[in-house]
Image 1 (cartoon, rainbow, N blue to C red):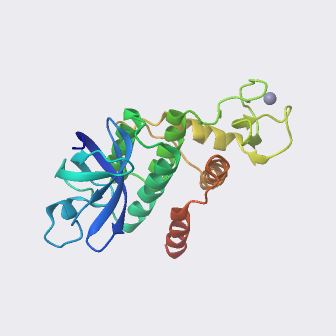
Image 2 (tube, helix red, strand yellow; image 1 turned 30 degrees about the horizontal axis):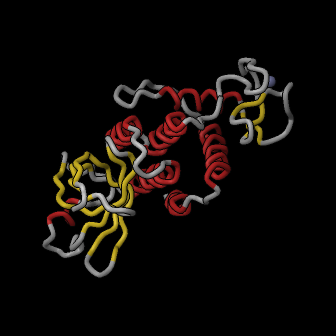
Length: 244
Ligand SMILES: [Zn+2]
């Protein structure tokens, strides 16, 4: 008999499995990232299948398996989030990065809480900024968040534009280096604001389009440096932005 455990989960990704089943990757409150098979979930009458949707928040009962777990039962923990296609595309990016950067069964409750808070805020605020703030804070929780408040090399507080170093993990001032991508001081300040964003009570701050684009570019290269994987959701997002 395999062990059964209960947990709260937010669904990160679903794919079809065999003819009638779904393979699900999610992030749980107490067990970190998990994957499981929901047998029969593709049948139209399956209750589990109806509940297991991208980014749904559920209570699950799972049989522990050697490589992948199996769903015993699940229950909804609140209304599904009503997201439009753009919001979905941004949450999918957050989910993809979360899956990439976390290990299976390594508990990290703060990541679970942050993902849920991000989902709540995205219904009200600019999804691009909300997800960027999520990604910045996710990196910090995992321990690879870049230093953007001072030069990583000499510790000087940043006062003018500098460079961003993937290798050193952050902002490098002009005196220390002239190699790597340029990062404007205002972009580094935006990054600090995103690091500090309180998802439950978001403080207003102004954002310039140029800084936002620069930050995204640097962040995506930094993620690529750490994961060695191109993000699939970025293409989809790029197509969406082109259309709008
Ligand atoms: Zn320096």
